Image (cartoon, rainbow, N blue to C red):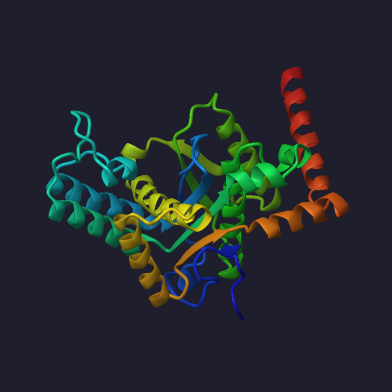
Length: 306
């Protein structure tokens, strides 16, 4: 039996094969999915959500390995937008690094990702397509923000992976920090609550944390940056910068060895149009969203009544 497709691959990778023995022998194991949010700036052309899934039992060891590397190489926190193009300022930790040090740290972090990651998924959406194809009445449910759309498909991919391997334990999901007042965060919270409604006991444990305090978020930040650069290349024809090309090819080679360890997916405009047409004609998802919204309103009203 072949595993399900998550979406439509940016690169020619699809599905999961039987790999990574820990998945097969430890179905009750808890997994933590660290999620990055590249491309949320309104000026950026692509929004992309990327997840790095790590067995929860290995996170402490990841922290140890990360701290050893961080102390040895003398930096406090990795942020790829700064790491990839350091600027001459007093605030950049990476300005003035020699080329061999930069490449060494870049390779070491990629090795950590490969050593600890059970699965990586990224889902990209071209903002222009989303704005032109998805009508406002459907965005009320699917997501007003492009990143919400990407997160919704990313969680759907995680769920397909969980069901394929018959993993019974819930996910812990960790997002990069957003303020409680941020409307993007409110939409993401809705996505998580809706997935918990569909899969009780699986998606209730989610949080928003500071990247600089969690190596998992710093690792997925690198994955997200590489996937974002490749999505810009696919959607907009932007040439790949050298670092993104090196990282992409490295992870793709590892994924071929591990039979689909990495999935980089997007929704083509034609398929987005097809989904909108179907939704308008049949309204397949509308009853669920209406029911979920009614339940949430009832809970709020009951809470206020008390």
